[in-house]
Amino acid sequence: MNHIGTRPIETERLILRRYTVEDARQMYDHWASDDAVTKYLTWPTHADVGVTAWVLGDWVKRYDQPDYYHWGLELKATGELIGDIAVVHIIEPILEAELGWCMGKAWWGKGYMPEAARAVLKVLFEAGFNRVCAAHDVDNPKSGRVMQKIGMTFEGVSRQGGRNNQGLVDLARFAILKSDFT
Image (cartoon, rainbow, N blue to C red; front, side, top):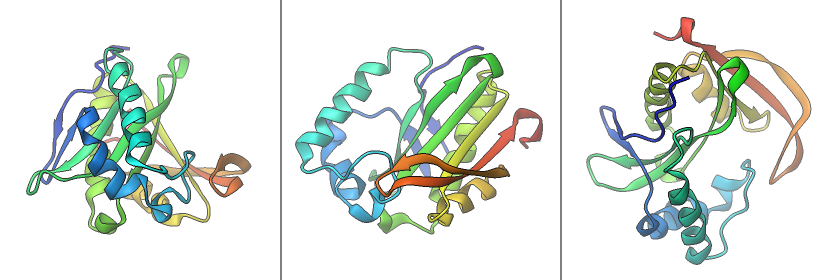
């Protein structure tokens, strides 16, 4: 493994970048305060922008770690922060990274998350990962659609294999190998 950490990534419409604590207002307003966005996530809706600032403060401190991969998604056209993508778990012995993401609902269905996720896959495979996986609550098929769009293969359902804001949930699991990535 050659961990490279969270470096800036540019796509056609997005800049994937490190967060700053100054991003708290946009993150709070655009997704962290929205129950529709956090419904299937593992963290609760933020009660106020102070919670968001505290969370960002923790994330920013972790950028010094070379195995920390966490990006804010910024629209090139407007500079707005619209979502988040991160490696939420690493299993070094099998060179696996697990991705998680969320996005403000104003930007759902516009292809931004698949665009960001494809760019992140490229970076992770360059860093030496062999396998990148993701999972979604079976009641949230739109997240699974992103996984399909980036070339991940459905591997099965883990019955009550996860916990999110809905409680214990069945998780649909997807993955892509470096050899499958084009």
